[in-house]
Image 1 (cartoon, one colour):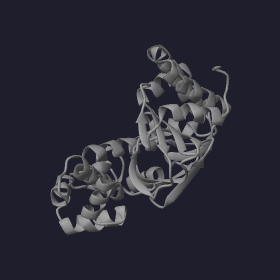
Image 2: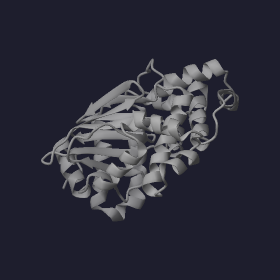
Image 3: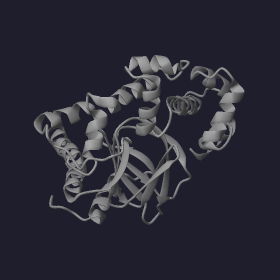
Image 4: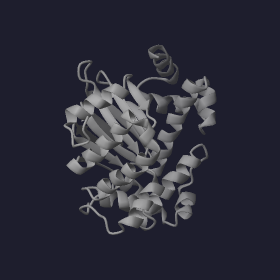
Length: 298
């Protein structure tokens, strides 16, 4: 098979050989996952990591607070920080499953690219939001294709994967949302302070949240923290913490077999009834029913 630029259909064919099961399929290429889904799904709360999600077949949406981002074949969602959100595969079938190339962004690798190309920048965006959807450029698709092709040549992965990763990051940075990624993940400015606030919340989500303490930690006023946090994440720090707690409680019940009461205490809830109400609001049913349903599905 040639390394020249393929069609999306050819990319999907190669993808299908290495993603035979629905869900996330790990690969030997660092930070590369292949997500497959054979039927449309209901909206599923999940945690998005910083990365690039490129749709090769089908369509998907991601809802962040009250905003929904739709992306289909030939488009990618760029996410520049850890975000609790809701994923929804909207177009998929057994004959034509949804295929999504998912590549996690390593800030250190991104920094290495910036050292080599310090002036790289896409078109300036007026939005501070850490999420965007764009059409994939031919250059970005070509880099993704060559990364996929390494699955056919595993002996080449240790040498070639880091080189292709650099190109992929360069193509994102020089694309339409490059400045968004650069602004969020760079070392200065209000957006980078929000990245620090997100990291603090992820590390301390089970502790009572004092917004004043968080604002002081990132060297911002309380009002500025609220304004910029919502501008980047589409939610308040309190809403962000709540979703982190609920995601972790669900994981504890599924992966470690904890009951709802124990899981709620572990993630910082003092009131089991409040936990049950907020869990039902996010997942559509009480904890016991939701976890039972998921276990039966598995």
